[in-house]
Length: 357
Image (cartoon, rainbow, N blue to C red; front, side):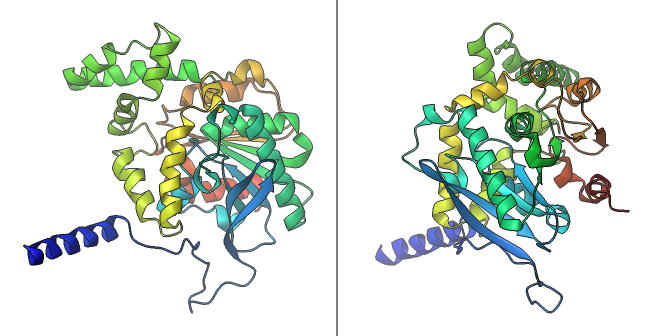
């Protein structure tokens, strides 16, 4: 019995280490063909002390003389760096890129946080503080800022209020009118399941009539039904991600760039973020009425198959918004994360945005 238990314990420990491997939480460095760190490159975690807390971020660049880009990721809760880890992009080739992990989530998680204090104003203030930090640290008068999904809600509001801090705004999967986007996605996915003859999923949609009340809308928005359907139908995080569990959850547990505790905190933060006022605000944000113009250039990066933030609404908003320069880039084989889904196409577009021949 003792030997049997010892074998069982050893096997269990091995499985845990496979699923949840140990790691020192060090960001992989940029190395040349000889395995030596590339001169003037950077890959690090760092923290910015702000009012009543610390903001964690990951900064990466193959050349620290490149322009600076602040990335306001999706979620909130799931770090944008995880997308970079799973689907390497070109951002660190072209920029000194900073992945901010929002207050109360990821590297910025603390058990002391009060969910009700995670407001839109708090998040905008944090983004502005990080923008100032990056400008000072890297000697740039202005930086670029990118929003992705939820992050577009925060980034566009920061740009609207503080245009002098930024060269341009890059909007990936822009939130435009999320309530209308959810209605459009709901109708599309229900119709797809009807065509596929999947009566079980059709019934689940019919049992969640999101137009009937705010309570039903909120229930659906955070439900497994929404996530399952979007990923099964290829209109969610990426075209080829079948499930958040296999596509994000398990990879996050294996990401050695985070320590064990940091990996646990990612999901602690994700869990509590559903209670943040800023999240509720983002689901009711209407860019058409709230941000009709910007004082700096804006570049939209949209996946043709994006139903998380409706592609059609993104284009409609692009046509309406007034800005000194505006461009709309379509990624024809992408859903919600085009820079990570089509890195070669993204590279060309980033060069165009930066004015590189």
